[in-house]
Image (cartoon, rainbow, N blue to C red; front, side):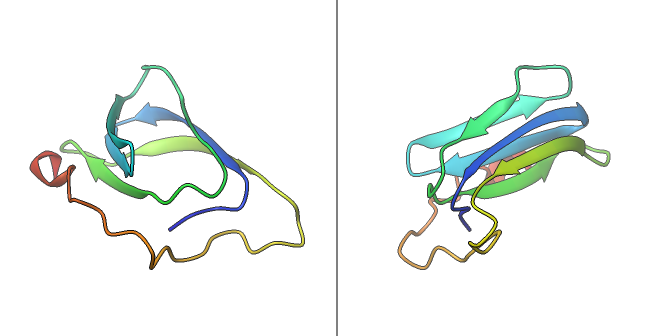
Length: 83
């Protein structure tokens, strides 16, 4: 999926893996927050053994849809090993 605006989040509990065309990013609770530029396709995978809780902000024009599919990008499944 992708968002027309910037998405930022900070993980409070658990861990996650984010894949974009630039590669993958693994984040754990208490680590640095994540910022994804508007329009970038992404796949987010919750990882670890427990639930993941995060604070999320998507900053965008309210006249645009919050999220849309990204059929023009095929993820390489880089986060598969972390599931």
